[in-house]
Amino acid sequence: MQDSEPTQELPAGTPEKRRARIGRLIRSSAPLLVAGVLGAGVAVGIGAAVDDEGGTTTVVREVSPASVSRQADFAAAGGMSIREIYAQAAPGVVQITATSAGTKDPFGFDQRAQALGSGFVIDKAGHIITNYHVVQGAQEVSVNFSSGRDRVPAKIVGVDPSTDIAVLEVDMAPDALTPIPLGDSDGVQVGDPVVAIGNPFGLDRTATAGIVSAVQREITAPNGFPIDHVIQTDAAINHGNSGGPLLNASAQVIGVNSQITSGGLVDGNVGIGFAVPINTAKEVAAQLIEDGTVEHAFLGIEMTTITPELAENVRLPVDEGVLVAAVRPGSPAEKAGLRGGDTQIVVNGQTFVLGGDVITSADGEQIADGGQLREIVLSKQPGDTIELEINRDGEVLQISVQLGSQPASPTG
Image (tube, rainbow, N blue to C red; front, side, top):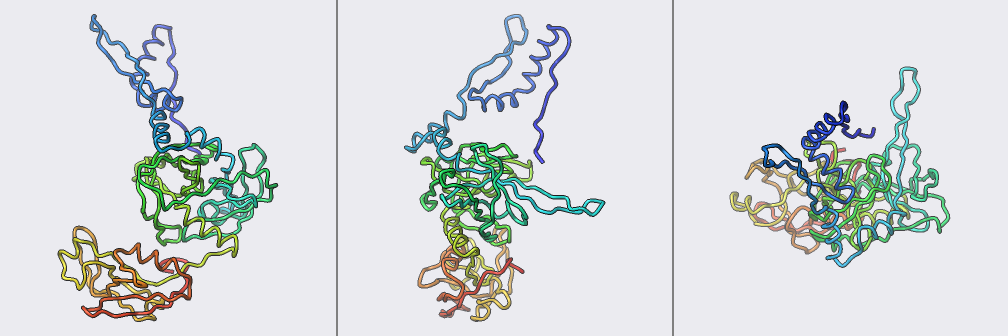
């Protein structure tokens, strides 16, 4: 359901009363007016000043629009303008409508539910990347292009809940498709200017601009597993942006807009959005197009990174590595003999489970944190072997683990 915009009634009465009430309305609604005018390119600041006769006069002044500073960011990065990025990329952005059977009405008939999202074309064969959660449970999927044509039926090629990525396919002539170039998310840095294009609240092909606010974030996938190397941005992302592209100053996709954090205060953008890195999406999409499915390697442990605070406050056999907090029953880790902890402590508000193995290296690479170990595991295929060096009660051991396939959920 689309959220309604706040409205205010226009004043009525004589012209003099209307002018007086309009003045009061402007002064009481200054933040709303400024926000509205910013979208038009000119910000208007409204304040009150006392005149010589003691009356109050409304003072209107122009201030620099935010869009000017955004354009400067892109120019400083040696890239295209926001307008140029939009002109080049928008034709490749699609609006996705996913239809599924909902609940039964009182008469026993299915009430069909529709979800709106975004996606983008990646090749002339008609493949489109979007989020898994956009098409999750869908019975029918269609896309709408910027050319204004009617909705086009789309086939779900494959989905990967572990990375929140899905690939669709449309049957269209190659010259009717505009693929968007895919960039390299490994080179993204904090401060880089970015543009998000999508369909927030069903408003098709909306562009918002911002910067990369942080990198190497971790978010939770729809199936509960973590997604690493996520890009955080302050470009406005709202419901309906899911699956759309996050673009750099060269109009290349560096991420797939997937989640927002609102702090529980509002149901919309507060300047904290997250995009799955395009390097992850490229690998997943390639496997989905080739096989229709993706299998992720699985070790089967719950782990916690050894922090400097923990190493300082608790006597551990090593100062760096990951603690094995628990081992999943029946997992490759259990079969290889890895042991979990049995003693829970809290250090500076963070909970740790001690008494289990400490993993210090994997395939000869020193392990500094859990994300590093997870990346090594996910770089492998189910059935591959990983060589772990562990510290168990002060004794250094070498353990070989044959990795399995990631289950449907961390606990399922």
